[in-house]
Length: 124
Image (cartoon, rainbow, N blue to C red; front, top):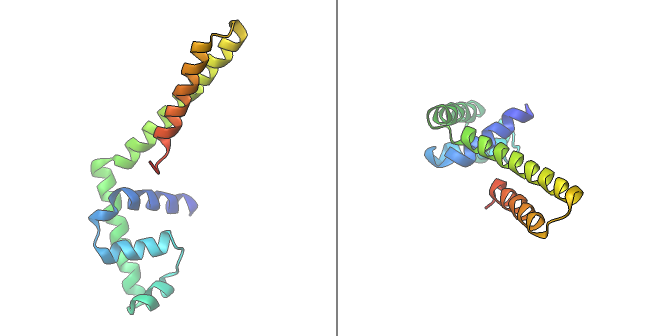
């Protein structure tokens, strides 16, 4: 269940603007704020079933958009690649320490790792 929640939150972050305001609000309340269908329905003044239907439609739209466009998938690939690049830079730095310590190699590998961390951060 947690993985589905995280997937929906990612999809909402990438494609949420493509939903209606009501769908965006309901799915955000449900996944981000962890409100129950009954709580959302009470706050919105509609039935629990109405909220469920709106959320299910929004989920389907978000999944369909990802299948067509693939932004989340590509984002995850880039993030994984950056992690690998950072790890390789760390290994280069370790070898540098063993073989004679070039200040320039050390500085460059630290810079590469820093750039990878900055690029992998979705808050930027």
